[in-house]
Image (tube, rainbow, N blue to C red):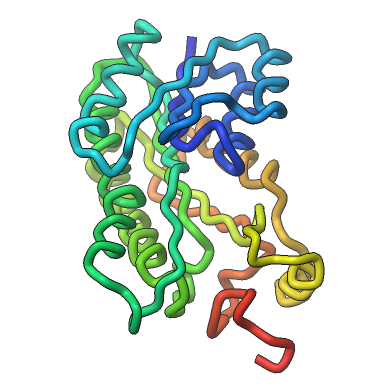
Length: 252
């Protein structure tokens, strides 16, 4: 039995990733910060695949809970997990001129420090065969701007962690990343904004959650790949946008 941990795995993009991994035959350890009831589409995918799953609640800003998360999952499944997907994220809307220490540290804790500690715990477990870690980044790391300042800094840190751990954990563990573009919109987006954002992409399209999940699933089994980041973003990383999409206008 192969076991995959997906942080933030019950909702939104994390749920899409978890559902894809269920289709690949992984038993799922679905982390959530509070509610461990998976989305209906994920439950349907798990049922169709016939794989085991368990939900586990942990606050990724709490050092003690982060340290114990992976060992607790290994105990529940009776074996060391084979895949860790760091998908959970904190997302805020500050800028350099409005950032404060609390906001910066809270984003760093969840988006970079917790993945580092989870990776440490994951690597410490004894297992047979190849194992992998996939970190979920953001296309904006290629051309960062000042919007969502604390979030962006923390994702840049996670990108650096990916490269460092790829070298440190080889050959036993492969460490890669997927950097999605605008995939599941927040309340800041209406239909017109989505159409405008899509038109800005070099490929004139935005990625679907399933496409991001496909990239994660491929990296999970790509035995000759480590230290890589796959951008699934309609080509957004090739453009230097001055602001986040809701703050752009057609004349920007």
